[in-house]
Length: 113
View 1 (cartoon, rainbow, N blue to C red):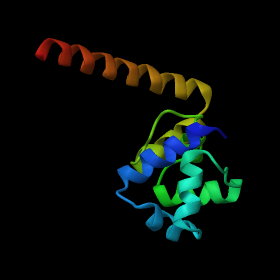
View 2 (cartoon, rainbow, N blue to C red; view 1 turned 135 degrees about the vertical axis):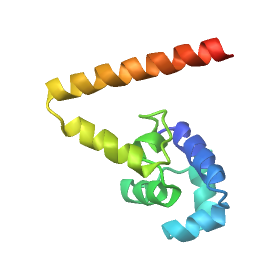
View 3 (cartoon, one colour; view 1 turned 30 degrees about the vertical axis):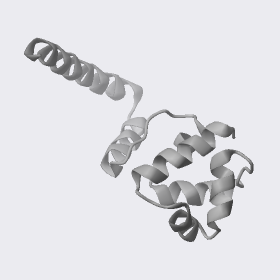
């Protein structure tokens, strides 16, 4: 984990409108410890990092910088998990349909503006 972890915690905490103390209470630690995580002075254990992710309603991948996507909609995450379980041929078919829809949406948006 890097300083990026602290930046991600700050971002998600502010988006959830939580103070350090409120986050600390949810995680089972103290506000000053959360501050040390945010500044990068201290790195949490995997267990504590997982609790922070759960309290902030983000993925651990997001907090550690493995994903730039901050997904707050649990139904999107559930769908992504379902898609990952599809056989590769079905996944490819779905991506073709999705790509066509996104292309059409972007084209329509470009001409509307």
